[in-house]
Image (cartoon, rainbow, N blue to C red; front, side, top):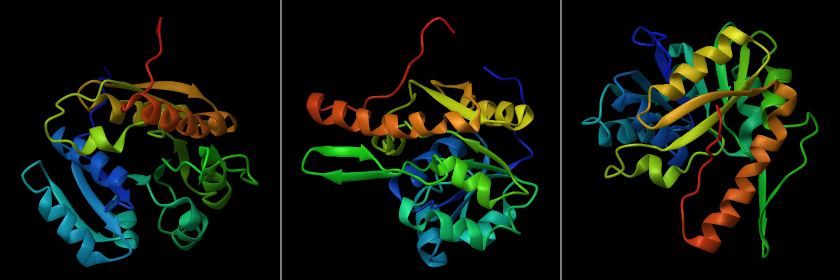
Length: 221
């Protein structure tokens, strides 16, 4: 468990009205952190935040306003809108720690599979666009179902945190550690993000076969 103090920081979640974004926001707010939900639709974000009001400090607004308000900004948007959104927020996100949580996946009759990304991964694409931000990859393999379930008190999973900026990865590890049961572990540099993003396709296959909500636990760490 990290001893980094996050209490003075605002956590912004872009795409915060989707299942993963809502779930992460729920857990961060429940851990006592100040959270702002972002969406293309400010009214939808406000509605989602209101629905979670009993959990902790949450408010909803546009993605742009959330990006401006956040000290740590999580990107939890669909892959097909990833590059366009980040390009539009490049100036707003300058100097901030940006946590890319996006998994570029396709689906067909055989199930989920990883999509090729020109830059290597969604996280690397974010870093290529946000040249003035401190880009980290994390929270790729966490079940949205468990995150959103109010009866689940602990999220028993490890979060692999990837990045080239040690101070930024330490901060994001501390953010993961803030959620009961969750543990943030350094998983390598940005160039290693592809396989962590792609692993989500394997977890989806596990979940379908075993009717589970599988996560990742690393041994001997």
